[in-house]
Image 1 (cartoon, rainbow, N blue to C red):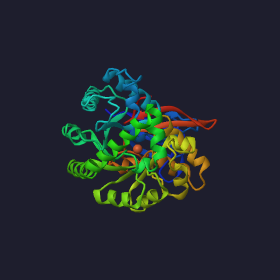
Image 2 (cartoon, rainbow, N blue to C red; image 1 turned 90 degrees about the horizontal axis):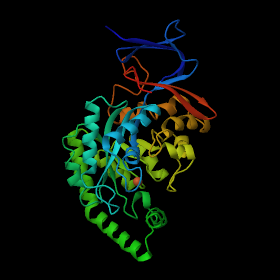
Image 3 (tube, helix red, strand yellow; image 1 turned 180 degrees about the vertical axis):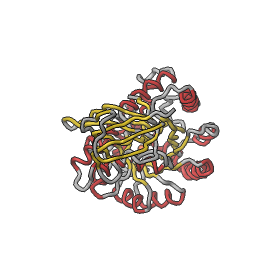
Image 4 (cartoon, helix red, strand yellow; image 1 turned 180 degrees about the horizontal axis):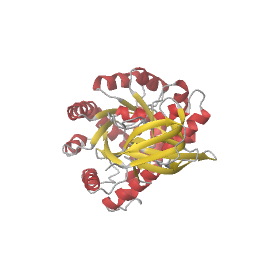
Length: 379
Ligand SMILES: [Fe+2]
């Protein structure tokens, strides 16, 4: 018994061109792509048919788990609410960010992220989820307990990506004190003395732990087949360090020089879709559109606004000279899938998973009209 579906009269976005035609899927896989219309099947009415989106870095599970500062929503219910939102954005594969390394905010208990991973694995095993979920461990290497926390994930086989972050002032994202002051002092309402003491503690922790923890996690990740990402690289020295550690993905480089050097070295350069939709970075760093125009942007991630992942490629194709829609779509599908070693998805091609999104654009904003994961409709 085989289950076959036909999508016809669509604008099929392939990796290198757009084809007006028909896609046939059978048993959850793409089996044929043809020019021209079919008499049978779902009429796409001229809508685009694109591969299901592959999201490598979203913090949005946190928002569902902690909808108010002191409210921790039940994990399974938070995951399902989040999963529904992810699927409705056209995302069929998602790497959920869990952050490791205690900070002074104390927003989460030490074992909260491991418990969340347990809930995610249960939800997967029980068939509760629409999208295919993996875990991206965001490791704050300047934190004293990041290794202890990392080790508790030894039995979590859906961990496929780990990023190495150092958010101490004077480093990377916060190369200037103005940026750090705005982000932490103003946000947390600290006095001058409290802020000075906080800065001193963060810098001391970074000096003590960062290099050692970065190396330890990189080694452990290599041993477990977990793809490594650098985070907020700012200088050539950061990029050289990333290459030496075996990093494949450069998340959110904060300077054009670091982005260009990473791309040239064969790393996939990832920037935020909100940055593209807004036209600038929320923390005053480089604009992703500038990287796209230079040809050094490889992957887009929704970061903190899930719907931005389907919005951003259409903005790029419309507004950045030299970026056509197939290339922009590849930044949210084929390239992220390749960066994390998922060879079975990310393109509309024979033999791949039938992860598909039907979408049209009106007034500059895409409308997601249907989402299929392995041939099954999920939104
Ligand atoms: Fe950062």
